[in-house]
Each structure stands twice: as C-alpha cells, then as structure tokens.
Length: 331
Image 1 (spheres, rainbow, N blue to C red):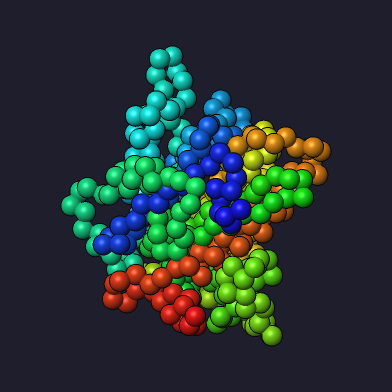
Image 2: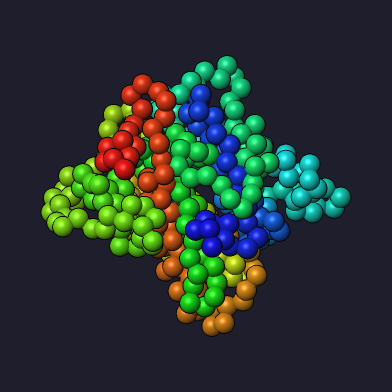
C-alpha cells in the first residue's frame, strides 16, 4: 500500500504542472473503463460530462477523470485527455468510431500570481495530454498537478491522496485538489481538522488542539477579497463491483470527508465536486452493509487526503503567494 488512490487496482494518476503560470492538471486513468458517479455540492461548480454520470444515462463507464486548475478555461484539459486516449484506440464504441469518456471538474486559481497572459492559447489541452502521458502508479503530492495553484482561507492548498483497506478486503482510495474557501486548520492551527483520522503520522502527527475555538462557527476563517474564489475537487475509488446507483451513493457518502477536514465547506464560493470510480475487481459480499461501510471509509480516506495535500504543499514562487503550512508552522 502506497497510501495513494493507485492502491485501488486498475488506476493510475498523472500530473502536469506549469509553475510559470501557477496551475496544472491531474488525471485519474482507468486501465479499463470503470463504473463512475458524481456528487456536486458546492455553490459554484465547473464540470464536464457530469450529466452522463446520472445512473439513468446510457454510458455507465468512463476512461479517465480530469481535475484541473484554470476555472472554465481548465475544462479543455479533458479534451487533451480525450485526444490522447483516442490516439491509443480507447473509448466508447459507436459503430466504427470510438469516443473516450472523460468527465472533469475545475477549480479557480486565476489570481494566484502566475502569468496568465495566454494570448488566446490557454494551456489546459496540452496539460491534460501531458498529465495523461505521465499517468503511473506513483505520483507526487502537494503543489503539483491540479493542486499547483490551490489556496485555502489560512494556508496553501494542494494535491493530496490517501488509501485504506476495508474490513471486507476492498481497497478504497482518494485524490483531491484542495482549493477551499474555508480552512483545513482548527482555529489558527497548526493542528489539521482531519487529525482524528490520521495514520502513521502522515500529516505531522500533531493530534487535536487542547481546546477548540468556541466562536469558530460565528467567525469562521474564509478567503477574503478577490482571492475568495475557491473549489475542492476529488476522485474517490474502490475495487468493489458497484452498479451506477451504488457508485452514486458511494460518492455521496465520500463527500462527507470534506466536512471532516475543512470548515466551512460547500459554501456559495466553492464548487465542490467528488467523482466516484469502481474498478470492479471484487464483489460485495452483503451489498447494503458493505456499501455503507465502504462509503464511511471513503469519507475518512478523503479527509486524510485533504490533510496530506496541506502538509505536502509548498509556496509558489510569486510575490504575495500564500504561505504553506510549513512556512507558517515550521517542520
């Protein structure tokens, strides 16, 4: 177990990062088409092909999922992934044609100090294809891929991942780009809100604060000014055999992991989106209780992935860029 979403058999992840621009793309590649679903809760989402993931839709499986910076410009990343997959002969068969199925979601990172002077040529189609070409079992966390330009209300965001083995033997994993309007910290920190779920000191081992801020609900940390645009986007996955309806429930339960690791969450300023993938390697023994347990575990795995993103993130090389957790709190 690498403590990455790629511990789920049948998945690979690739990052493409442009530090000059301060943005990037992360692609979750399915080695074989996987059952997929989505849960959208934020007030300002930016998505592509999510209608296709309705359980009533005809196409049940996807080839990849693209997570991108760039706000609406970043929706082009999925086109780059599609082009790369088409060149490999991948895609949904329609007669002699093949159409790769690549849903995606974007986050807002246009005001993070990078050079956004694209002169009519946004980089996201290229970054999407580069991320696809980089897909592998191992991948970096922190200020990379879709996490490159991420920020939060208190410390720099980034890309995180985590995994766990369920009691049923199924593997559950998550990857997330944390760009939240809220904060991943208890109060002013340094403790992370996901601390109760930490394993093996994966994000510092600081535990819980001795006291909790009583007025946090009245005066929550929120991004201010023009930097308040946000959105946290994620993929959760399992090797279980799930139907589209079951995958949808898995995504719904998993999204609670954002509430375990960020506060506030699902605000009007966020476009929070969680995709679910089921690679279908291991059947459920007792469908309803097994699915409930997998969804509960996925929420915790996603919370850990959020905290790992914060712990791994590093400040971008721009004036006035947001400080990372390590900048503020040390080693």
